[in-house]
Image 1 (cartoon, rainbow, N blue to C red):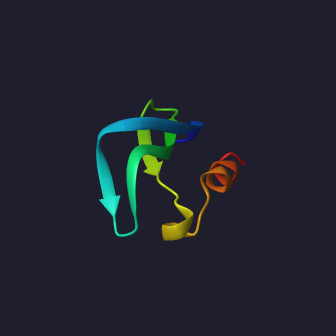
Image 2 (image 1 turned 90 degrees about the vertical axis):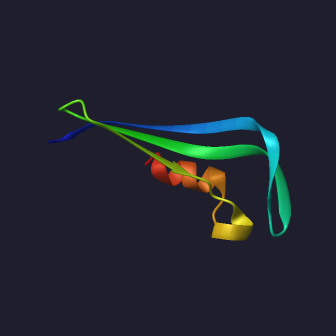
Length: 68
């Protein structure tokens, strides 16, 4: 099995009801989606929500790193 393709997407969408964590309420979600496909047509999907105040990561830096 060989990885034949990797796609990286920035996804942004509003949510119907706000989500609250200890310091902030969110009305939208900004994630990074990674789709990996193999030569055997198997597909794996991963998702990340980098938030500087929680993970120490910025979305733009995470997207750039994954795009290398």
